[in-house]
Image 1: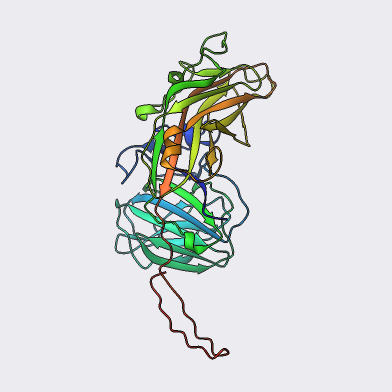
Image 2 (image 1 turned 180 degrees about the horizontal axis):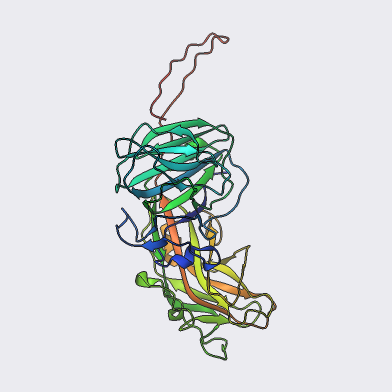
Amino acid sequence: MTLVGRGGVAPECIHAGTYAVASTVPASYSVVTTPAPSQGLGRFKAVNPAATWWLQRSGMTFAAQPWTWLVQRDFRAVGTFSAGSNFCIGIMNFEALGLRGFGQASGKYKVALVDLTGAAQGTSTTEYASNVDITIRVQWNGSEAKVWINGLLEITVATTGRPTTGQMILWWLASDMATVTKYWGVYSVATSDTEADRIGTNLRRGRLDPTGDTTEDDFGQQGASCVAGDATFSNWDDYAGGGAPDDATTFNCGATLGTKQVSSLSTVTVADVVLGVAARYWAHANIGDKGHVQLLARLKYAGNAIDAADPLEASATWVGWAEWFSTPPGGGAWSQTIIDGLECGCSRFGSAAANLDVSAMAVEVFWVDADPPAYLDLEHDVARGSRRGVLRGVA
């Protein structure tokens, strides 16, 4: 096995509901474009949160891997910090230690790996100022977890826990301080069977928007009839330019089992290693009590197609949906050529006598630098009578 991207969230779609489970965004959470992240378009924001936000299907589930990494770029906490003024940063589906800020007498805060009660298991040496971005990388290998912050190794903790999902949770505990504003930029999760594949912290993202129709053009559009073949890309390009879905004003609709609608996409310039893409949708069923209406995410490139394994069971409520793709259509590795020629849409399944209406669709792309450990161990083997020195760099 080589490096595999397991999930991520930008957010590049400036619409909080798109990232929410069942469209429910907890009070005080939003998606914003200011303060601007160091790269990309948006951030999640929470003002004095009193609830946890489970982000919508931001990655796949997987068996425990030898090496797992999480990178969270552009986290920022704004508040008046003191001893005892603590706040959660995030956790990976409650399977491994989470991240929490601990206020200090200096008016700054430290970052800690914590258990599910919020108790620190290991704490950073460095203190971090209010209203300043930090970038965090966590590494798990089944025996310990390490945390780098702004490029420095700050925490090492013995633990057997490790994530088996790419889903990030914007965590909250009742013991959190009452007055704090938090921002999260892009995050992503990757795994490998070798530490040599360790990813860096220059995690970047971009959004691909619908730009044209393709030969897969089975859907209809808004209106009572949903006539097959009437759909067009401009009905679901609502995220373009930072826009939000217009719900029932314009949409593409599938009325028949197995029909497909796919659009060509804009592009972004990528570099280093592309971890994967997330196809995102805003959809519903036009009649909510007529049985199953399912949306299956669909990617295409050069005649090859991938349909998602997990469908959205649409209801009468407009909801966000996403599917993570770690490999491109046709297999192999992602490249600039594939990103340039990628197409996306969806298939309509389910036996219900109702239409699948899709108001908005876009694809988020995630890429990152490589950061293999810079060490070489040459050990001394007394039993064999050999002498080997030791040269070690920063791990």
